[in-house]
Image (cartoon, rainbow, N blue to C red):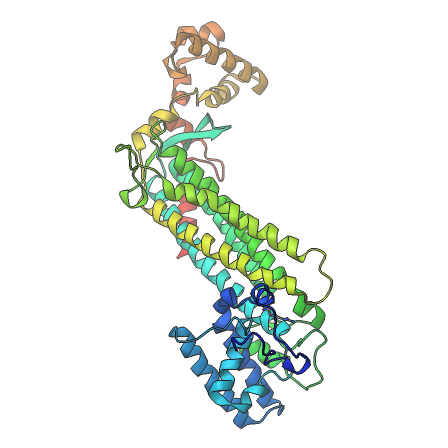
Length: 464
Ligand code: ARG
């Protein structure tokens, strides 16, 4: 098979000479599509069983094929398989080895089938498995975040807009914000999985086949809900891969945002969290350093994952129906994105599970930046009946006064406050504390510890 001058064993009938070495290099996908071996053999098993059930091949041939494929699979899984570039891809590598193992019946396997529907089914099965793996990994990360939220349902920290202190919030509330995002990510993968779970097998090269195959049988043997309804679409569709990449892009973007917060929070300037030793790295020159490398790398992973999405979209745009070899470029993008997304999820789960919030620092930071100014304005509305716009104005004047005095809002005296608005009473001080501030935000989905606890309970129930 490595003889470059021999014509190809699979289609050699029409060719006198083998491919140029560079042709072989650009054409071969075995370097990466060997990852589809298990799915390829599963597809072949389903196909062979169906060919026998419909009387297209003899039961004895199907039996030989079935056993031979099991042998090939065990060789591949044991690392005993000699992959050949001359055989181009996983489909032809498996079939050629099957021929060596069982002889003539191997040649009957490709009846009523093409590599076009074969690769479409293999890759679909692979991506479907990844959806399940991603779903489990997302659930694991959600559990780690819910555990953080449970521990710190009432730990007060600053909430930010524009990365400026805005209003006090709770640690648990902040953790659960990511849980919500990850739940949507799971929904996107589940949705994509549902849509991709239809079988292209039996579409053959593009037009279907003249053999009386049973596509429903192969579809159900492979766990698909139904055969795809149009053979041209079946061999040319890569939406399932694109939907996976799109969902992974959004999911990786979420991880990147959380990673960015961990990078900021673990800095000496913030000290909101301490990453465990297991999730920190040192510097070869600066002995004091604890670098959040894993968080930084997770932050960066979105680049290649989103890149894969753009790359495959670009491959697919403008391709005429049906299969074109361009589509072979789908796999490396998806493999790389899936591997890196799974790695990022595992690393994030480890970091979140191991990190320690610095409660005192969070509490102190929450009280800076006039974070209870909104509570003050709300109090002016509630207690004194001011229109909100006027209350906003009065509060602005009080903030300016505190700023000029170099103090925080609760440090102003009642007399100073009354100098700005005569109606203010001592009761105002109740709303200026950060604990009272968060406790008052009892609106559904708000940051009050009672609300956070209710949400924690909901997620614990949902995540089992
Ligand atoms: N290795 C090919 C791919 O990944 C398999 C399909 C080849 N089909 C063909 N008509 N050359 O797309």
